[in-house]
Image (tube, rainbow, N blue to C red; front, side):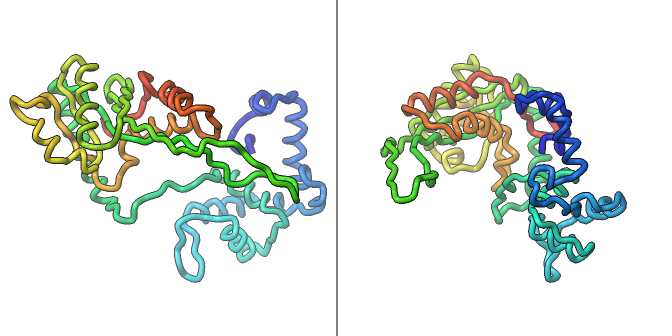
Length: 310
């Protein structure tokens, strides 16, 4: 799998903590016998290596388009759809899904979850609005504003263990914290310096967001600020708007609104992902330990995420 992603034998040996010659032997065996080099029961099934270069080019071209079944176009390829295509086009049926995985891999595919998109999203509107935002940002930068991509997130502490390997006839009990706790945050990524500011919140509402903007103002030495964020109700509340404008507390702050249902266009979302990856798939003894790891992974760090075109 690593080789199919472009890793060379020395790098694979380092990752797997194996001798380089062993890795080279494995790769040679795979290139010679394919799946039977790993699972001897498939010895003699060399279908995986029977495609000609021309057929592989045809498969690559087919994979570049969306799959069809019963005249309907599907969103993405699956192993079953690839099986149906290979069987219909070439009369080939592999005994192992691993052979189909290999076809995907050599044509630049990897197995991962698709990104979720809200069905209400208007891609043309998003594209148009993002071009407008690019122009707006450039104007604020020329006026010496500090431009931030801002957003909120919540961090939860609870034990999530749905299944485990347990011996038949025996009962296993896992001691866990039953109270579910949450910590809310406001994050702001400076699009010029790439420095990230993390501000804890008691809750996600107008009062707490206003306090977060006051703290961001303090950290920035009362410079003029431009915040790019989504259309959450507390971002557009009457109470917050009353603080904006000439001779008001937030007269130094301007807002730029992202298009509806387009969180992927906000660079701050990428920062949240890094923070949550840092605490994922680990059991934490205390909520403070969880928060400490999360905050340490993104607070006062630099992230080279940007809005396209800036």
